[in-house]
Image (cartoon, rainbow, N blue to C red; front, side, top):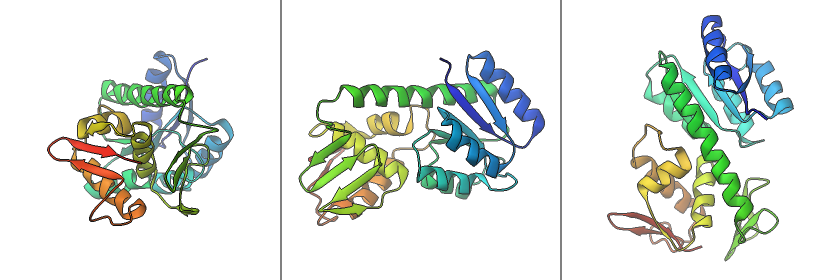
Length: 234
């Protein structure tokens, strides 16, 4: 069965181009130009990936991303008409998995789409084959990660995490005790062609520590391996 892609874009020429090229790659594509209708379609059809413009009638891409991230874990590739760092950072913090600035080459977009879909397939395969995950819950001392509900519980209290914080913690948890380089984390959590640097990893680790460590300044769960990366102790 072909993977389903929801294209949310209100520029007719770009919609036609995206639809033609994605369908030529074998994907099933649905295109919607209104933000409210796109949100309804995402909930009803559960696509494998969403290509999402920021500027839309009804609801903008930021709001759609914020709402969807509370409900599901579909990869979101955000499109922005401005090369504005604030837009990119806000989109990623709200839960977008990657972004492209218009104008972009169709070859680059297709590469990003393939990378995100491949990342999700690999993650699902790892989860299905991981014996540490029982009933979709990964457990450690006073800490559990619920994959179905995308919840983290610390000492019987639900911890609020941003989407990428959750993805990063889950990857750490699945590789407990292993030394992971920043490049490893960028490739596996953000995708191999994510254009941000290793600083992205450090920032998210700092945010995670503030939420799950007894003493973020002297962490016991996420250990820094100087010059290399991090090791998760659980």
